[in-house]
Image (cartoon, rainbow, N blue to C red; front, side):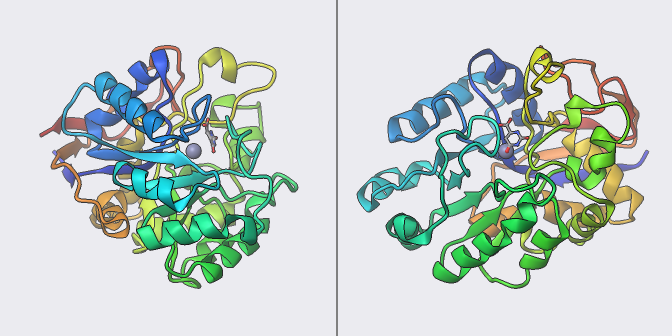
Length: 335
Ligand code: DOR
Ligand code: ZN
């Protein structure tokens, strides 16, 4: 039987939520990943040291394995250097959202003018705290990410020592930025490697594929696939797995988010195998992230086998991507 062993898989962008939802989704990520960068867009967002510590504690309680590290993040505000010094040992990155760009981002920034942010970003840069960015303007929905490239350029040039991660990139424009600035990196989701806007809205509307940034054009997906499959050294896997209850997705006013945590590794095997690039999956799923973030991940080996896996219809009240469908790879065991 064909198998592949992934060591220390990392998901460098995940939404674990809180309360009952946390208890459903945290074990699904901690089962097959060594660690994950946990997004701070709770209600209210994670903005204090106490909130970081308390949220980490709740995640630890919700996990079902000990060999998993939640890498914590703060929700960006203009923080003082003194505060950043006090919190730096407890966080891996700070996530900045444009206000209103996506789920629970109302407290995000209303402007990316550099001057008001300079002191915070300079302090982050000196303390080695990475900046993760939800890069979308408030323009026409298909153009929001491409329009944001000028902001990435401004940030990269003004803070050349700050590591900036372009989160969940969806366009060729973002891929092209990677080789232009030393301090720009990116995460890519599994769903953006698979779908385009056609899959979301080309036929009957498929709310479980609706997310922000919205899936784009075939040429954008091709550009993402190229850098993922070659495991471009500045690119990492970040699922952006974002659970919402079925009732909130299948409703008038569908929340943005695709839930992929329990099927991400299986789907990645399928994609990398289809392109004859399984040898590069280890770098995309772990090695690049460990190098970029300077992380030494918890040791874990995940063995996947070419065995059919029927995706459950629901995990708790959440519908996963590919619900009810058969995947070609399954997780055989985790050591
Ligand atoms: O689709 C998304 N869902 N994109 C985000 O940026 C946030 C996320 C969520 O929290 O649901
Ligand atoms: Zn996200």
